[in-house]
Image (cartoon, rainbow, N blue to C red):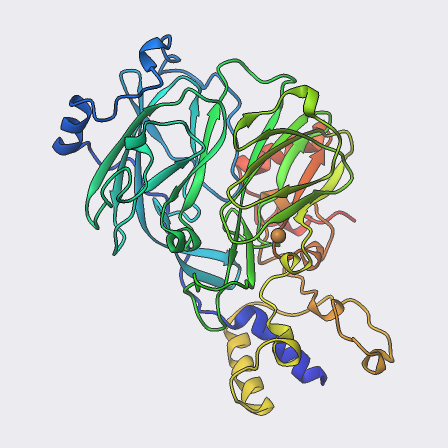
Length: 456
Ligand SMILES: [Cu+2]
């Protein structure tokens, strides 16, 4: 493989896609309950057999949440309003443009302008009303995965309800008597693979023990998107883009934890593959599944947790060691993004074009994007004579500036070259650095500060 050829494939990995706009801002909270919905509730169609009548009064509707909220990096929370003791959410299914990497925006489907959808957070015992609107071009419904709801609320087309037609609204209404890590998703398999999933977290009535200081959520997804395409192939069985919360490394926002704190990490999977999620430099315990909290007697040390399809896994660890610790899927092909640099040699035959044509095309594209390939890892002089070369070295493409955000402040130069696919960091910071980081996150770094952003 000539240097030019290699360079072409490197470029193709990042420039091959369309240059579409940023994901739309979160939309929500705009719909009012319609008469049909109100009537349905009055008629008791949504009555819970789990007996919210037995429950004591839900938590007070005003004031700060009585629990530690989960943070979902790169995804918003869905706002709510209170109708008496009922927590009311407005959830809208719609097409979404999602920027999964600095130069790759895809046409996915999601909720309220976000893919995956925004996070819903409630407390055990609360009654919720989700006023749902379908702005997709086809029918859909919402399934509340893991939640013990009345059959009318189960969200399976034709079994528990009629499909919700385009333009229609539907109200889901139930009492959350469980605690744990749940999710909502379309109950159409292909719609799931277009991205239609989100977190539904039920915080316990009484805090978990031991107490956690940080609570993070990660949604695992895989996508099959051909070069120069923006629409995922939902019938594919092989994937070339792997995301946490709808973003591929190195664009995934690192999680920030204070040294000495206890960190909870909730991971859910709504894809076609299983993902062994590994944490560097620490041991964690499995404290919960998609069914809720696990008894402490079942906890044992581990550092890799297999998150199967439709499962939730909750792990906790004490952040005893300062540093930027990787959290990543350990399947080798899930630690990469689009493997177009390997197209010609190993996988798919590219379009029939000459090197000259291809290079000219790539040069034109490269000029239009402020992105350069620098910081290649060294290779041996005889590299080209060694069978199997190249493997990883030439895939390392730093793009620190393109993915810079307050949470990446202080990472060593070219940090982004080592991060691809399902990969992020838990950055465990001592008090002073932690406070500075929190300040920076609230107020993004100024250009002057940016100049001094790297550790020496
Ligand atoms: Cu994986």
